[in-house]
Every structure is written in C-alpha cells, then in structure tokens.
Length: 389
Ligand code: AOS
Ligand code: ZN
Ligand code: ZN
Image (cartoon, rainbow, N blue to C red):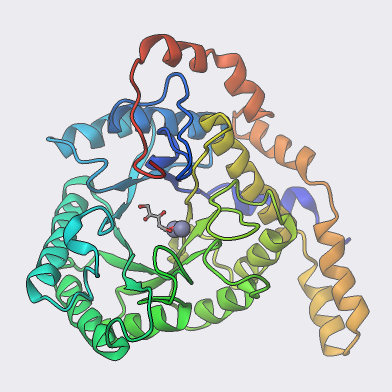
C-alpha cells in the first residue's frame, strides 16, 4: 500500500453526515412499537439528541426535518436552538402518506383537488425551507398501484410531471428537489417512482435544481447500487443518499451493518468522482429507525460505519488501480481494491478525531457523558417518530 493513511484521511475533515429527526423518536414495526426511556417529546428535543451525535463524532452537522411531524409555531426558535446545539437544519421531508385523501395517490391522483392539496403541502414545505435556511426539499412519493389496470400508468406519470413542475416553480434559486425512488411499498404492483431511471427522467424534465435521492434500501436484491451511484454522478444528478442497511426490503437498519463491503463500494465511487467535498452537491443522509437498540448510540455507530467505509475508499491506491486496469490485469486491479477494504482504519480514524479535539471513541464518550440518564429522568411521554404504528 503506497497510500499514506494520515494524508488520505484528511479528506474526512469536512465530511458530514445528515441525521434524520425521526431516528430519535419511538418507532417500531407494524407489529409493535417498543417505547424507550428519554425519547424526545418535540422537535427541539430531537435536535438536542442529534446534536449529541455531532458532539462526539464531529461528523453529523445537520438534521433533516419531516413535515408535519416536526412542525413548530416558530421555526426561528428551532433554528436558534439548533445553532446553540452546534448543528443546522438539513433537508425538509414532505409527507403524503398519512392522509385519507391520498389513499389512491397524491401528486399522481386522478382528482385535481387532491393533486392541488399535495402540491400545496410541498409549497408549505418550501416555506419551512425559507424559515430554516434549508436547501433541500426531499420528496419520497408513496403513490403507486396494487393491481394491474387499477389506474393508467402513463396518465399517472403525466400527472406526476405536472405536479412536480408546479412544485419546482415554487423553489427559490438556491433550493433543490431531491426526488427519491423506491421499488415497492406501500404499493406492490408498481410504485409511481419505482427506480432511478424514473426519478432521473422527471429530474431532467424539471431542470438543474432537481436531483435523485438514492436510498440504499430501495432496490431489488443483487442490484448493483454502486453502478447507479457512478451513473448519477456522471450526469451530475446524484443529489443525496438515504443510507441504511437491508437484508430483505426497506429494513432501515444501521448502515453498513449487513454489508459493509457494499458501503465501501458505494463510497469508492464517491471518492473516484471527488464527490466527498461539501460543495459536490451530494448530501449524505441517514434514513433509519432504531426499534430495539438505543437510538443515539445507534446513530453514532451509523456515522462511524460511513466514516470507516469512506476511509477505506480513500485508501484505494488510485494510480495502482488505474495501471492495473489499463494493463488488463484483472486480479491485480481487484487486489488493489481489496487491499484498501481489508485495511483496519479504526486507529487512524481515532487519531484523526483526536487531532480535531474529538474523543477517540465517540460511543464511549457518549456513554460517559451521562446524557442517556439525564434525558430518561427529564423526559416523560416521549413521542413516536411517526413510523410503524
Ligand atoms: C420511505 O421508504 C423513504 O425511505 C423516505 O425517505 C423516508 O423514510 C421518509 O421520507 C421519512 O418520511
Ligand atoms: Zn428514504
Ligand atoms: Zn425507505
């Protein structure tokens, strides 16, 4: 290995991972929500909890909000609270999956009244972006069909395109739409944005302020996700990740827990494209729920997993890799990648943290801080995240 770890890992200094506010509330499956002591009672407390992750890792500087779950009377106060805690507001997530009106669709609905209502909700989210200084409007569309013939697939695409154009027209110049795709769920015959191709086509139609969100849990088994990453980076339309881990479906478990090698391969494409830089336009977000494990430590573990995969990607000897590829040396090229992947980066990462005035072991530092006992004593009747009831 000719790459110097200390040098290579310097690229992690400005690298931040955005946390979801909904990771801190009670959550569960459709079978059971397991309440935890000390969970936040309001968006202010969710931000305080997210800030603990940043405090100990130095790598989680923003929190995504979800509307309406995180609606407050005065967003100025929430922004000030976040600043006091050392974090900022990140993407604003819309919600068109918890209203009777949206049973048969929202932005795609056949009834213009329902479509107008769904568009108006997104305009409300854009107002929240103005009030919070957020750049990104994240749209995950729960629309789709359960039965062949239930509705006209093409008409729904046209209605979706029209609705998205209305939302796009309401953006300010510095705003972006992050358009997420998902192979299935809540609908099972087809979703209206089931794949990256559909998302990208709508983004291309909308204009440069529209980009694709890649949620790592939203693909068929054995999909080559790093290929999608490379392709979207190539055309400048990878707006964000929703990181999480899956075995089966949209499991929303801790990123890098089931398949750390896949996470490495994804981050390898990011490093290859020099897209780690904060100005690259890629927002690295987590989209996870912690149903049976402690939430703040789980988010710390997640941030460290992304950091470790990224550190390994930074260790890839790019010159050696290129030379082996050019020479057509299949095994040598593969070995360059595997050398980096098989490197233990935990000690160099701890050194890097120490050099930034951060704890070498963020999880231990959190445990020693007494925060978990403090919130358990102070908070009674914490809120549900909104998922899994
Ligand atoms: C749903 O499956 C998606 O992953 C969403 O990105 C996300 O969980 C949601 O936007 C939170 O409301
Ligand atoms: Zn997602
Ligand atoms: Zn999802």
